[in-house]
Length: 319
Image 1 (cartoon, rainbow, N blue to C red):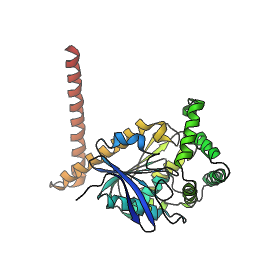
Image 2 (cartoon, rainbow, N blue to C red; image 1 turned 90 degrees about the horizontal axis):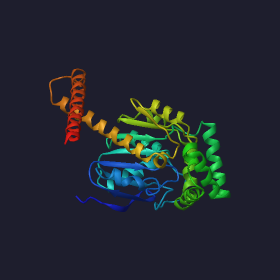
Image 3 (cartoon, rainbow, N blue to C red; image 1 turned 135 degrees about the vertical axis):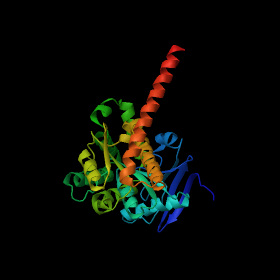
Image 4 (cartoon, rainbow, N blue to C red; image 1 turned 45 degrees about the vertical axis):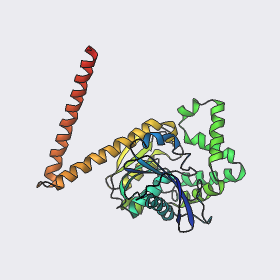
């Protein structure tokens, strides 16, 4: 079976969807936010993620090099595009990371195709913009600014996307570079359709159906999509774990290392838990009896490993 790498295309319904695959290892799928594409949202993190993972990124409709009929967007159709890219890349099962609007797409995918998803991380997501007055007002303002002056839209994205502390550290030249990057990476016809979708989204019924291990990450200094939305998203997903980054909405850029570390730690935790479940399935012990024993064994192993590292450190200090 051939394993595609690099940039590829797959036909899905009325769209020609662009995707890219990097690295080797267990599958990891990254889903971009509103206006983002497979390069602008993720390029700076690919070297780290692809060191031990086979990473797939998708330009769903409205972004990057994906082409479609230009009609209104549907969340289910975007999830199908991501799934089709995974199938074309021979990625049968994968861990899923969704950012902002991409978190909504990822949640829809996990609800509709649970057999494909091992686990999921949702960053700066929301359950919907339809009933939230503030989000609706913001999305309408985005549309107005894009029509009048896209560079003004870019300035607003920086103002509300970064935390005040981070934004205050940027020089005038850096601010201009960020505005240039936002204007250059966006397809204005495409982002307009994505914003219209932002306004209509309601994923609460999808969230209730999610059965995969899920980490929801909120951004404590998020002005664009206040952190209460991420908390509501976590509450809507059965058994979801919730953590926070001290960042604005543009966390992949403001806190890239912390974000990547949170993703990696969660994926390792899920893999460990699944290993214990596999061992339990091969024993005569029931899960209620087995899991406490497994957790105790894991804790003892960690203490032993940490003690071993401490002994090695002391030995190295004396040499």
